[in-house]
Amino acid sequence: DFFTGVGKRAVAVELIRRHNYTASHAIFLAPTQTLASQFFSKISSLAQNINAILLLGSQLDSWGRDRWMNCFSEFRAIVCTPQTMINLLTGGFVGLDNVGLLLVDECHHARKHHPMNQVMKLYRESAAKGAAGGKLPRVFGMTAAPVKECFENLLAEEINCAGEKIGGTGSFAEEELSLLAYDDLGAAQLQGWGRAEAERFLYGVEGKEDGGLDLIGFMARELRDVKKKERFLSTLKLGIRSAVRELGKWFGAKLIRLSFNAIFEDFLAGMPGSRDAETQSQVQSCNQVLTGILNREQSEQRASDKLQCLLALLRRLEGDESGTSQVVIFVQRQAHCRILYEYVLEHIPTLRAGCLLGQSSSSDDADQGLTNSRRSLEDFSDRVTRILFCTAACSELLAFWSSCLVVLFDEIASPREMIQILGRARRCTEKVIYLVPQFDDDFRCRL
Image 1 (cartoon, helix red, strand yellow):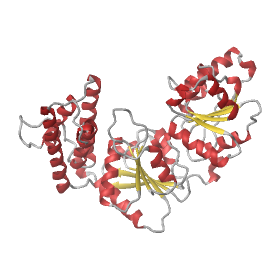
Image 2 (cartoon, helix red, strand yellow; image 1 turned 120 degrees about the horizontal axis):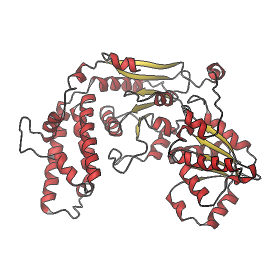
Image 3 (cartoon, one colour; image 1 turned 60 degrees about the vertical axis):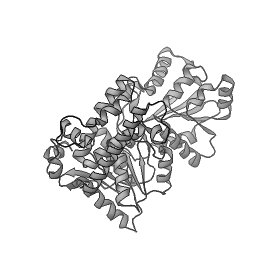
Image 4 (spheres, helix red, strand yellow; image 1 turned 90 degrees about the horizontal axis):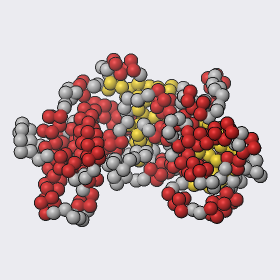
């Protein structure tokens, strides 16, 4: 149990370097493919004498026994996800008696039905039966936010390091949290912005009860799956209202544009597909209406006070030629993160920025047309980009090896998430800046 940023993965690299590979393998489990790829790159640079391999992706499903045996005879250190490890164990390609060291990153996931816990379940069953001749691997679990179930499932003893014992590492920002207040009175005026207001806004027919163009309904009808349609409607309407309240009307329209482009991607690219002439005409009409709404709101747009506060901060950082620090801006919702990134680039074109949304489900539209996650992270690591917009989920599932100035754009959902995010400011000169509403006492109490 070490705080985020203290160097858990550096310890893991050292354990891999010191492991005796004459009779067993070392396996590193990471909860995501991106995190596994990052750690493999770290091993490749810091432990070049170790013959390691990264095992990821569906292409492994086609590997036969001979190929797996050749892999294990050639490579002694393996980096993979828990699901890959389960496939290896249940398929009989590797046994726990062949593994001398098992490193489990973000081990607080070892609970309930997570693949990481399934791996440890096989370990616990072998331990209970006294299997493998007592040759079970040593297990090194790493987390900044442990839970009791995690210790039990890893058969681990709970040892907490006193803060003074690790305070000299220089890994923490001395001023961990700075509050930057914005005037939220403008946002308060939009709190009553509900369904009726949303529909009038979207259809562009102020005050007209019937006969308006049902833009969202038309998009939903294009989705054949009933459950997907219901999820789309509830998520989109809730997202529109929150986007308008927190950012402004233009952002609500932009959110619709993301979903519209994803649903009718083929048509907008000049491929009408199997749609009949009437449907094609409706798509064109909806596209024109949506474009008109965006243009209207762009010309009348007033950025929310919260957004103006962020723009002022970024302009100050951009004008600081002596500043070498990179900046990570955490946003809770994927769609908000994507739209915020595009908006900021429009207003500060010289900003070297990237956008990282983490793992998206097949129903997410926010990542349409974005640079893939791995490339965005590489650009940030190589300092091609200086500022990175990303979702709060990335605080745990991605490792930022360099020190960063951290900006929290939205309210953090949980103490665990806060622990993970605070660890991104790794040097004593770095700060974490939290944008907070000036007149919301409840927000400050929760903080």
